[in-house]
Image 1 (spheres, rainbow over the protein chains, first blue to last red):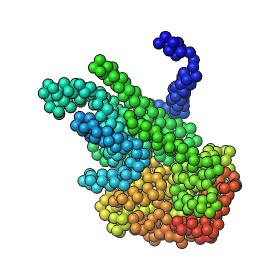
Image 2: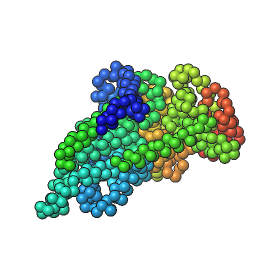
Image 3: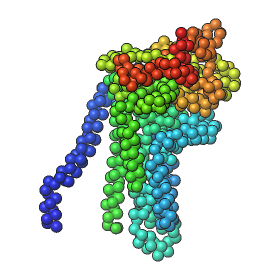
Image 4: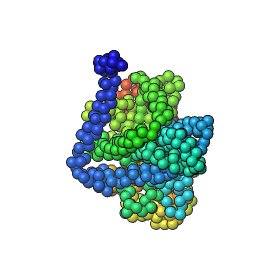
Amino acid sequence: MLSLRNAARHWTWTRLASFAFTLLAVAFLGLMLGLFVWQSLPAWKHAGLGYITGKTWYFRQQEFGALAMIYGTFVVSAVALLLAAPVGVGAALFTAEVLPNRWRLPVKAAVELLAGVPSVVYGLLGILFLRNWVYDGLESFDLLSGDTLLTAGILLAVMILPTVMTLSDDALRAVPATQRRAARGLGLTRAETAILVGFAQSWRGMLTALLLALGRALGETIAVFLVVGRRDNALPESFYSIPPLVEAGQTLTSKLGGSETNIAYGDPLHWAAIVGLALFLLSIVAGISWAGARLMRRKEECDAPLA
Amino acid sequence: MQFHVITRCSLVSGVIFFAITSRADTLKINGSTTVNPPAAEAAEILRREKGMQIQVDTQGGSSGGISMLGDGLVQIGMASKLISDDVRARYPGIEFEEIHIGEDAVALVVSKDIWDAGVKAVSKSQMQGIYEGRIKNWQELGGPDRRIAFFNKEPGRGTWEVFAHWLYGSAKKTPSVSFPEVGGNEETRNKVASTRGALSQLSSSWADGKRVFALAIMKNDGSVVLPTNKNIASHQYPMSRPLFLLTDGKPKAEAKTFVNFILSDRGQELVRKHGYLSLKQLE
């Protein structure tokens, strides 16, 4: 034990290399952040706080207000989360609590495979089927086309469903089997055990699953790009009305994925405004991931005495 | 967290695939989706007959082609618009060489329901009204009572530039609007075809007359001009544009082989085959 501790204190090559690589990763993140902030400075100088709160984005008039895109990003992700959460958690309750083990793993593996499908494939499926379903299904709303925030939200829900499901399933399975057995021994039914023991103890893990899924939804580009409509300045009159959901909109990612980045390159102000959007996106996703990681740690601390 | 492993594997294989396909001696071409069909077919022929390594891509349309050539990422750019002085000033070290390979027209296309309902032509002032949001219903153009679902081509696309130039004189004078946007020609055609009451700008060779239909332009005297080859060649039809291959200085090595092929009779036949006017037809 003692010699081991001594060895660890020496600068071995392994240690040095792992230290260097860790530093590299951190430095890369730091450099990227720094670069984004530095490159987007002209936009902040030009528009001030209006860069975030401004409602109009007309690059030829040098008006850069990102609010409509931030709104679009959150609406699309919220729709995705609202749709994926009940289905994903429900599916996890089924696989973790009901399915026998020899069936659980194949089902889980199949669902996890879905998470590996490239997003452009989902996007093409969205163009092929989902657009038309939304367009025909909501005909009474008199949609202009099938490209809406709602379409993008539904597509994202399908894409994040595997993440929600498999991580929720992991959270449920982390609840010790002895507790389930004890609950059953006390006369609780299977459903009561699943809800009062399984779900009650793993909700934190499920919340983490939802946050990680949200992070993926916020950053998703190609699939959203293909079905969201890419309409600038699509802010509703009031934030809680439904109709804007069935109109075309723009998200941060669909803007960044579009051709405007090619035009912006070379014009310092326009380029700064585009890089600033990337900075917004990075901050939002980083914030969500951080919250998720924190929750995960809290969960582990809570779990520790039980295990 | 098994799915992370899968994601990582697909990422790694993607990188390897990229590394293999983008060897140093590969001729890389990028740009306009309008120029792409004949260029891609020419690349296919040269690959087969001369064993050349050619990679043709359409990231970002004409602007993407220009900026990737400017950054030295590709040897040939494809563009369906002239290179502006702004762009030349932005890349002082690059000698943009515009090689004219053919001509194309921009059509205003509508979906089948509108065409069948009898809307066959649009005037400049009507189009301005639609673009500025004053005309919102097809009734005002003698069509059915349906909202106009206008898909605007992304800024930076050659198609959009030609349209803006016709309607307002230049891109700078064009009012800023917020419509749903479409990118490449395939996307435009599919979205117009699958949306009732749709209208968009599209390269005229893509207006097949089965799923999307090209409107004629109505002149002030009431006569109409369709984007036919004859009208495009004689510039009777107002929205036409040259198609270019772009190189940095005179084309060299593989790039030269490619450019010469496109300019040869066989290459020009490809230009015609994909619905554009060859250089001979323009004379």
